[in-house]
Image (cartoon, rainbow, N blue to C red; front, side, top):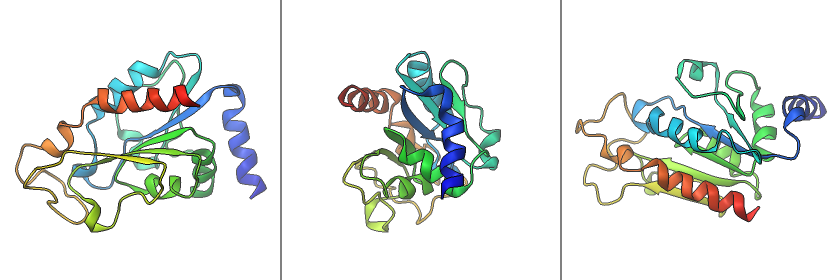
Length: 182
């Protein structure tokens, strides 16, 4: 509604003219979380670019995640309603997200590129982004995938290869390709 749009206008007012990328580092399940140091490495590579503003999204429960801020990094965690988050995502160039709800919100907008990171879950379980404007990153050929329908509190195999082998450079390369195209 107009109130949600107005609030997002205010949140983004001083970043006009910049390309908005959003990172969603949270998930209810530990095994669905790409390592925070990987997210921080990506942020470190884009945080001082003058043409980009990087937004960190998530609920209040994600405020405990130790994410790099500063430069052109804006922390939106716990500061938006679900509808405001949808409006924020709608205005972004791309969303980098774990297998969590931002995938599905971003899938509603044709213009938003989704970079989805999948560890313990796989497409046949039904949770992949349906948007054609998405790219899924996953470690294939692991016999332990999927390890569960929704993820868990720890890797059952104790190696967490499904997430650790998806390197920050892979995500960063796709971010740059997308940003340069826009």
